[in-house]
Structure formats: C-alpha cells, structure tokens
Image (tube, rainbow, N blue to C red; front, top):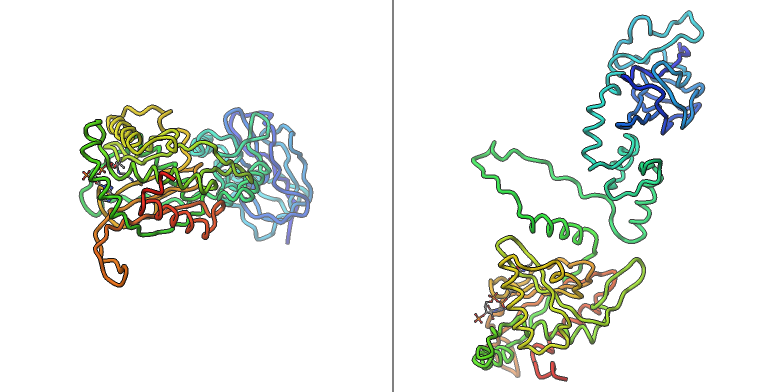
Length: 421
Ligand code: CAO
C-alpha cells in the first residue's frame, strides 16, 4: 500500500531563504531513499537535499530560483509502502496512513547529512576552490572531467552541468582527452619496511605535470633508426683541438642540432604547432636541448639554430647547459622552442621513447653510439652506429612523414658535407 507524503526541507542549520540552484526531480519520477531532490546554495557552499523515502513524485512544489527554509514543501511523494527511510523518522514525522497528506519530515540521519557544512566544505576544497554543486561534481566525476579546468557560466562563476558537457564536447572535438587519469591509490609503504620521504623538487613538480599532460594529450608514435656516424665522429675528433682553441667543447649534440635545423627546413610540418584545427608553421627555428640538472630536467632553447655554425651551437649549448646546472636559466631561456632534442648518449643505453614537449610536435631522442659490425660492400666492417628515436604527434605527422624525416636526418649525419648544401 502506498501513501502520499509531503517532503519538506529538513533542518539546514541557521540558513534561511536559501535559493534552490538545481532541481533534480520531476513529476512522475521514481526515486530512491537518498536520491537528490534539490541543491541549495548558501553563501558558504552548495548542499543537496536527499529524499527521505523511496516512491513516485506526484507533484513538485518548487522551482529553481525559489528561496526555501526549514519546513518548506519540496514535493508530494507517493511513498512506497515498504520503503523505509534511511533512519527511523521521529514518531511525529512518520507517514500517517489515516491522513491524506501527512507531513513526512526527513529522518534525522538524512538531515544530518545535509546539515554538515564541514563535509561540503571538504569537497569544495578538494576541487581547488571551484564553485559547483554536489550533483555537478558527481556528474563531472562520472565523466572524468577535471572541474578545475571547467569555466563556470552560472551566477558568481558557478559551474553548471551544461558547462561540464561543453567542456567534454570541446575536449573530444579537439582530440584532447579530457577524462582525468585514474588516480593511483596511496599506499602506506612503511607497512612493508623502512622508508624515507623526499619531496619532489620544484622543477620535478612542474615538469612532471607537463610531461603527464603531454603524454596523455598527444597521440605519440616513436620511430627508431640507427645511423652510421663513423665519419662524423672522425671529423669531430679532428676538430677538437681547434674547437678548444676557441674555447668550445665540441660534442655530438652540436652536430645533432645543426642536422635537425637543416631537416626542419626540409620538413616544415615538424617545425609547427597545432592550434585547434590549424597548423601553425614557424618561419623561425629555435631548438630545445634537454639538460639533466641536480634539480631535474630543463629544456633551454637555442634561438635561430638554423643560422648558426656548429661551433656557435656547441658554444651556446655549453653555456646554456652550464647555466641550467647552476639553476640560472631564466623563463625566457626555456620558451619558444620549435623542436627538442634529448640526448642520453653521454650516459648510455640504446633507444627510448621521448615525450613530446608540447606545443611542439616532435622530439628527437639520442642514445649512445657504439661500434657495430655492419655489412657493407660485401663485408662486415666496424662502424659507429648512433641510435635515434623520433617521437612525433600523429595528429600532425603521419608514419610515412615520420620515417622520411628520420631517414633524412640519418643521411645528413652520415655525410655531414650535406649540412653545407
Ligand atoms: N654517443 C656516444 N657518445 C656521446 C653521445 C652519443 N650519442 N653523446 C655525447 N657523447 C659523448 C660526448 O661527445 C662526450 O664525449 P667526450 O667527452 O669524449 O667529448 C661525452 O659523451 C659526454 O657527453 P655529455 O653528456 O657530458 O655532454 P654532451 O654535450 O654530449 O651533452 C647534454 C650535453 C646537455 C645533452 C647532456 O649533458 C645532458 O644533460 N644529457 C641528459 C639529457 C636528458 O636527461 N634527457 C632525458 C630527457 S627525458 O627524461
């Protein structure tokens, strides 16, 4: 047997005439105990009023914008006979079978849920101060949208459900994956053995956020190749003394940068950035070089690398990496790059998958060159082989273009006379 009951605003503390910012139910809806009915917005926070009973909504007495206080009628509910509120309501508030429309005050437990501004505030803080109602937060959570990135169009900048929908649509159409990465659960490692806590450095925190974003937002492809740099290395060694006289430490990265600058001219889509559906092709050629510092990775940029000689590039790289290690790089030193190189060749290892330094669309990873037997002109001959790993943004560069670029780079590095052409 069902009975019609009045559902009213429960005890909401000292708040009076609180505006309704969301209405979650309509006439005819079947609702459960604790289903959200309305969201109220106080000066401090938004809070949801849950249903104390299960049943079918007969009529709704309020609209968005109405101001309500404790005891205001929200709706008439045909409560399910066997539907028990979450907690026993106070005796005087129980639905009365004899009465046509008995007053059903929400049970104390349900009221406690919305009375607790502390819980609401905790939720607000966890979203870094974004202004949104609990139902919008829940909606955003379900879709994996990061509310901190959603612009609110409601009163006082409040984020509405429509704002979350628009954010997801925009992210999907721009190809950027909006859903936040699933959180890795926190583990108490001290349960398994002794541990020491070491906070990440400022650079690690900054670059970590950028790396995660770039890794998640860009469809990466990494193309590997092995380049014969025997002659290049012989030439480099032959020039070391002359370089030293000019105060320059002539290492492989300077040649790599020169070759990349020449290849970028040949393949302009690698010297570009994606802006929505438009490719911005750059008429300048600034190349970043990843530098390992005691505080973490930084990428200073060499301006107009295409206009500079190998000696000039070596000199500038030496100065930039020294300043990077002393923590003396300015923000401007790390801005405006068109393409990046990450050279791990001085350390070792063969092949890796570098992460694109957005808004750039490609990055060259360089590993350690080693002598290998190479089959050439009918014989195995010892050659110095350099492993290269080119990561590119597959939205901008297709596989054929990626392969052509790395092959061209190989041609330039195998015969550096071509750099002069
Ligand atoms: N293969 C073989 N030898 C190489 C090489 C390679 N690919 N690259 C460099 N070398 C040699 C150099 O020629 C140099 O040899 P000599 O001492 O005989 O002249 C030696 O290795 C030392 O190199 P280096 O690393 O000290 O200096 P560098 O100019 O080659 O590199 C820099 C400069 C800034 C790229 C490097 O110091 C650095 O920081 N690399 C790390 C970058 C990094 O962390 N990338 C990862 C990013 S993703 O997390």
